[in-house]
Image (cartoon, rainbow, N blue to C red; front, side, top):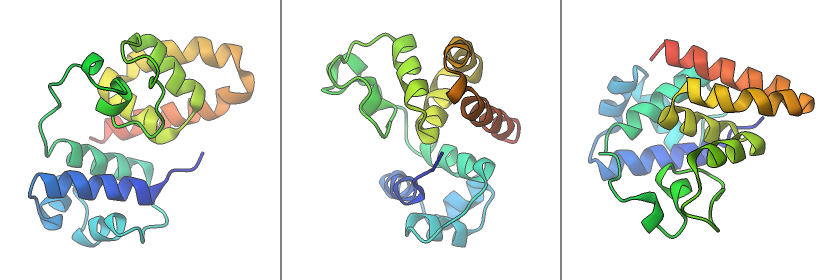
Length: 157
C-alpha cells in the first residue's frame, strides 16, 4: 500500500497556513523537527514512519476547528468533510456512516483508513473491517497490517 506523501504534505501545509501557524510551531506540536515539516510540505520527503506521519497529520488537523457544516448539505458529502482522497460518496451525500466506512475499507487506501479511524474510532473501524476481511482473504493481511499500524500509532499519540 503506497502513501502519497506529496499530497499529505500539501494538505498539512494548507491546514497550517489557514491557521496562521509557523512550521516551527507545528513541528513542536507534533514532536518533530521543523526540517521534517518543511520537507514534507515541499514534497521532498521520501520515507517516514507511519506513527510520525500520523502524529503530524493529527497535529495539523487540530490547528483548525472541526467543520460544523452538516455532511448532507455539501455537494460531495462526508468524503469532503473527512478530506478523503477518493470521493466514496459523491453520488449520495446522505450515505450511512457504516456504508462509507465499508467503502473506504474496501478501497484500501491507507491515508483514508487513517482519516476514518481518527473520525469514527478504531473499535468501530475494526468491527466493520472484520467481516470484510473474513470475506476477502486476499485483502485481509494488508488490512490487518494497516489497522495494526494505526493502533500502534494511536498508542503513541
